[in-house]
Image (cartoon, rainbow, N blue to C red; front, side, top):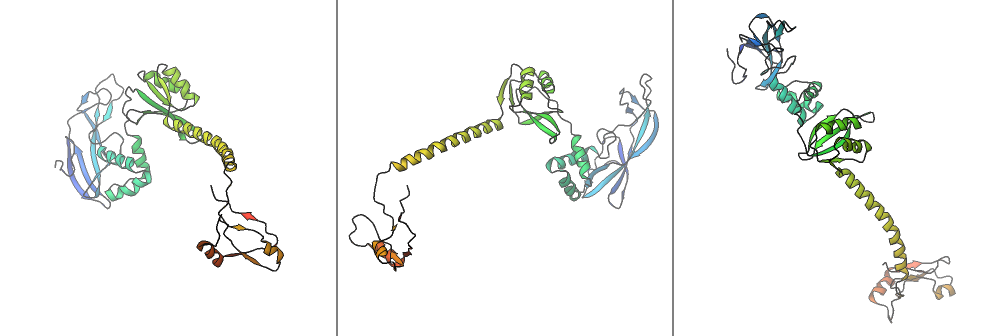
Length: 328
């Protein structure tokens, strides 16, 4: 029977049967294309050599995993100038060579991997009817085709670690689109120079203060303007502000002392703890009340009365007079 909307197939493929297995649906598919082009010379051939079966996983249907039992054929290549005499039938619309996942399932797995991670995608996939491991998910991300690097005008370059502390490479970012455009396998002047020579339209290079990228940008793009990247600008600003505050703190401390000494002499309004003459003449006295020393106060105020009634401080012969001066 032909393909159904629930399981669309490319032209030339037919569904022969559908059966239920313990963990998935088995869909048998057969190719009936009369010919197939050779992958080397692209010459179509209709001479069938043999057939074999592939068992790739496909997108789930109604929440159930689907495994295809795909029967494809091998053909003879009749072009004598090419060394390959037998080739297998290619189905690029459905399945890549040597792949165990169909093209549409591989795309879905890659989307899951980009949205989550290895272990997170492994936990999420069974709920979507896709049973894969974290290794398969991460390996699928390496199969994503990287678009060709176009000519860019503003480039940011910095190092990144393949393995922290042991192996480093270089990452290049298009600062106009804020997207990664290339990864260099090593952090050397030669690799940076080769990259800039292959992209002669670079006008501005944002880099760090390392000598590798200074020399690489200078030799590879001598006409480009080199600027410090944002992180190092903020780092320089932070260092400058810190140095300023350290110097200003020392000056402020000295000026504060001079300002203290320049205050006008005035009578303190705080309370004074002192040895009264009565205490010195009467050694048996154990306490004295707190008095209000406000200037010009002929009689105790309500405030001083409250202090006199509510608080008294004990003194010994070891106490010395102490004045609580007002805070500045």
